[in-house]
Image 1 (cartoon, rainbow, N blue to C red):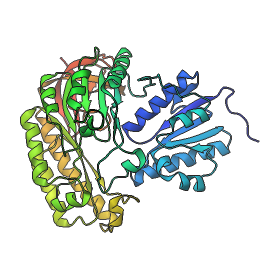
Image 2: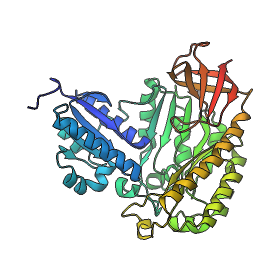
Image 3: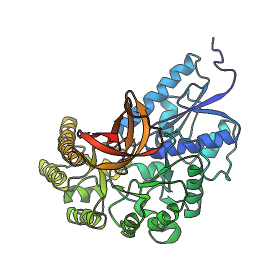
Image 4: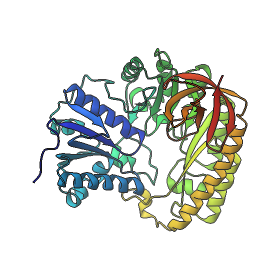
Length: 433
């Protein structure tokens, strides 16, 4: 017989997927706390909310497996209720309701008030910037826009997140001030497309003006830019980056491919020549800039020649940071009408080749850092090492700096000056100066 596991209703929020989902979970938790609810993140609770990802196959599988895992716990009486929200739920709600009917309720990405109601909480409009952060205390994600207006053929995000909608500068600044008051020193600006910021509200690309406002927030030391789009990039952002020490010389700009035929089919609105020229302009404007990009291999129709073009370009461009994904054939996208004709083993082999090239580039660039000193923020302690990052590295995806904890005591969240004494392909070893 089923028994209530916990006398008190404790809500456990489980987050899957990207930084945008992390942000959404934090907003949900802030709302629940404001309604007097007992809420935790990925700990034990008798009511579970799973914030899912529906972007590509691997992410969808992980989301479905997580739902099934909690359904087993519900059957066993270990949890009382399971609610599902987020992108997978937005995209596949009818299918999920049919396949996993025992979930208490499914909610889409825009249904936060309904989800809160189901959890016995009220949606409070006045809670601008109130959230329960789940990242280490020194950094937080700051979402400046929702949705996307780009027509990329392979991407399902507009289906799940809707059209681009910028958040007003004043609201973002209020949120930044509240985060700084809690001790957040690094703001990581996120959106599906930073490049487009402001066009809907201010009738112009307004990322530079937003940055000018954010650098005035006391307590914030680093501001980092994630997910810019190459077409129509507002170049005045580079002037602000050069002028304002708080803005990290770092840009995450997913480029996806470089073969003209593939870029055209992907509906990226650019060419190899234009993209290469843009990156050269970045390097000229901010010589010290670290560029992170992501690529997709195995897109429909990608020939060996297309792949060799991409490989050579990655070799020539020497990106500081790079990630590579295999193409995922997503229904209701434009590319779904194409034949997914690159075999899975070929996709994986191509991704491995790209990452091998990148690993060598990263190793060579890291060797150049030996003997140099950097400002480093300490994120955590792991085993015998304090683990930190330079301004050229984002959490979870980039290089880390390891400092021997048996020789030095450091506080997490603090900045320190570190001299690099050894370097591997994706890790740096340093000592405090």
